[in-house]
Amino acid sequence: MQPTGLEVVSVSKTFGAFKALDEVSLTLKPGELVSILGPSGCGKSTLLRVIAGLEDPDSGRIRIGDQEMNAITPKNRGVAFVFQSYALYPHLTSYENIAAPLVMRELSALDRLPVVGKWLGSARARHTSIAARVQGVAELLKIEPYLGRRPAQLSGGQRQRIALGRALIREPKLFLLDEPFANLDASLRNHTRAELSTLQKRLGTTTVFVTHDQIEAMALSDRIAVMFAGKIRQVGTPDDLYRNPADLDVARFLSQPYLNTLAARIVVTGRALVSGQHVVLDDALEPGSTGVIGFRPEHCELSLQKKAGALAVTVERLEHAGAEAHVFVKLNETSEACVVRIPSGMMGSWTPGSTAWLTINSSEGWYFPRAAQRRADAVPLFSASA
Figure 1 (tube, one colour):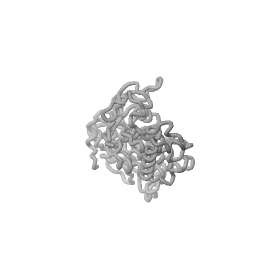
Figure 2: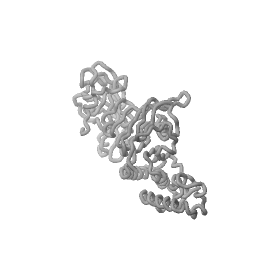
Figure 3: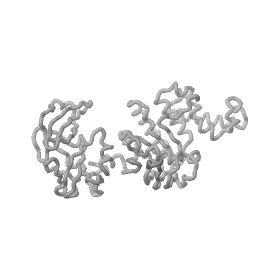
Figure 4: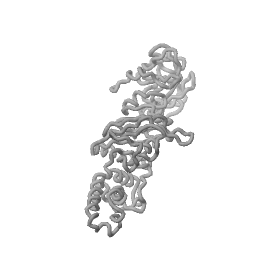
């Protein structure tokens, strides 16, 4: 099937007094995988359900390809929805779960009778065709050994692949995936994520992937739409968002587990006053304004010797994280907390209670004025190759 695009135009949805979606607009190119990333309750799943037709928008339009979908029933939208809970029929085998969409679409009630239906002349060819397509999907997902098992006999990863198989067999115009890996353990989640990425690129099906996990979104997506409180704050490639967050919420969400933020006042262009010290910062473009500077633990360093623009800090504690470690410090002047990432082999260089000097990489920090939105002309300072 030829890939088709998706267009969401100014969609709003309320539940009582709660505004789940607030003038949401988003466009997907044919064959693109876009993740909707945001915290729980931000409206991600509601947006997916509106696209699928499971919820009606209060206002706005949904287009799939060149067809407007607002008046089209869910079953006629050409959309396949994979739920977080898998939503498999517990009394059916994996084969029957995968075949279910085709059975309901292509066979009459008489044709679906367990024994007689398969031998009716009018239905025999359709049963054979369905069996061949189930086998093809099973081979694609490497789930042939599980076709005779019921969901209770499968692991979480196997159930997830059965749910994907049921979606694939419909040959949809659009995949909608609602946190499909949430119930898997970390190693299985990474493995299944890689499988899904390979499969989506091979099939070329336009895909909307909902997640609250920024690592998952970064790994899978052509583009990411970051969502808070029913609004899409920023859309871009994973690299765009990582390097150029539009506001403090986006920066925090894409800097897990830590983003350092320090109160700042811009003295002159390119220089911020932080904790009584003038700090060079390429992103400081609004002289006279106050706000915060944000920077990740990997974009600063500790030293025993004072350097120009360094901030005096006290080491509070250290946290081992495998190949790396985190040093937790407090600024001596203001008691604001920061985290610095170091190689774990250097943990012995720092002792809780000792004084050190914190230097922020001038090209890797961002300035957020009180309004929280960065100026548009700050973005070009961070190139894709930086």
